[in-house]
Length: 125
Image (spheres, helix red, strand yellow):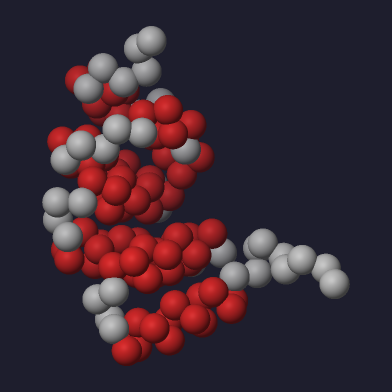
């Protein structure tokens, strides 16, 4: 038997959507589904869920980080930088990942992003 194709997340998406029909504010499932949506190219749907997650738990740094990724994927760079700033303010610390995360690639040459890195002294080893 061949292992399942990692790019086909239809089962996972259907499963998460079914759970959310019963528990629309389940943050764990919302987070998983947002990631699945993004991986299959449904970035608008992922962005909507990331926005909902931030509204549900505004003190969660990872939710703000994921929102920044969604904004960056939509080329909404000012909003992405502001969401990253909030993630960092709330304690997001996985700087190595942040610097290599392909979701944030559109920000790498964006001056406000570079300024944010300097402000938080990220990338200086």
